[in-house]
Length: 283
Image (cartoon, rainbow, N blue to C red; front, top):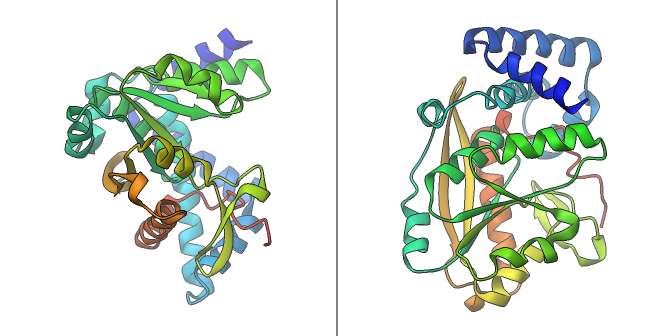
């Protein structure tokens, strides 16, 4: 099953971008118009985040979001056959901050949200720094699909750590310089250990463990966000959240992450994963 899946998607990845985006446009029509994939969730999330916007304005954001969602799906497939040179033409970033941390002999954490296209971001950061680049992922029940995504995400050198086995997965990198990338706007699995903070005017639970680990071993924390320049072109922006976490107050780093995430979502709302049920819990 895995080889059939991989073989078929690899052939799709060989198509030129003009055809890839035609396929994406077709997928948009099916997903948005026919299946109406999570339309109610997207509408509810936009109502929470932007109560000041009109219904028409929120509909426009939703349509652009679904276009970006479909683009990301097909761009991720395209990654199977893309070279590092092709990727670097379409994804850019200023890595001076990460180089500075590396040259100090330190490791670091990168906290980012569900900004499109995070799959290209994972690949490009891995290519562009000297760190052992570690990405946390949640294993998928279907073994063939799980194997496919591990193959895709590790193509350019990313070391994948299973989220349900982090303690053991980190052991080989304990004495090496690494960057640990965490999509930190996930819903916490354990609400009793979550940090509740105002996010778009609504109390929302966030993961606090990444901050606790950073403060415990004084690991610099960098905020990252991805901006869509135009179709098929992205820029990653890095910002230091805490150079010396040990000197920060409890929850300070997580609060900074939330405020920065909120800011960048407002600047480009169609580029965030609105189908993610971010406000499903009530304090």
